[in-house]
Amino acid sequence: MSEELDMHIAEGKVLMDSALEHLQAELRKIRTGKASPAMLEGIMVDYYGTPTPLQQVANLSAPDSRTIAIQPWEKSMLATIEQAIFQANLGLTPQNDGEFVRIGIPALTEERRKDLVKQAKALGEDAKVSLRSARHKMMDAVKQAVKDGYPEDAGKRKETAVQSTTDEAAKKVDDLVAQREKDILTI
Image 1 (spheres, rainbow, N blue to C red):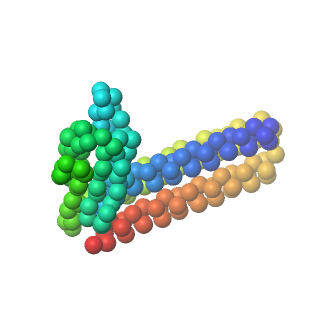
Image 2 (tube, rainbow, N blue to C red):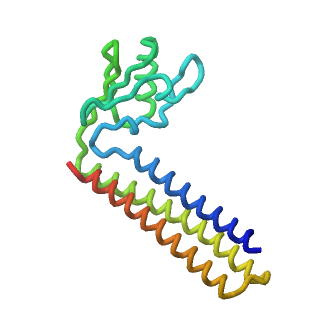
């Protein structure tokens, strides 16, 4: 019985870890006013009829804080990459110079920064909902185990451990969102 309960708790911790990883990935996509190749994650390019991630057809770099440089491995991909960036509707304008596609990152307005902070906080809340869902599953497993004969005092200790794990993960979410908020608001 104890092994089964430990397995349910381990599954819940995995769910919490994946929620944190997802939050980190989503926060990386939010613009901070500085150029980052991560801003272009998720852009798909038509590579000979097959939708392919941009990172698989070109080298992405940020030579300075206001520019992203994209060097395709095949020069024939320049126009396709440019088109894919336009279609992604990121508010960025690519410039093709025959060798590279360069994207100048405009400075963020105060209003846009506030919108991005709201977006980051919303992502943090979504992550916390996922954490609470995982916590709920773990608590249900503990309560069911106690019903099935698991010692009640040991069940209370498991519940306390689950709650502390959830609190730690929620603090990590708050820290990640606060750090991203600081990055966004830094001019």
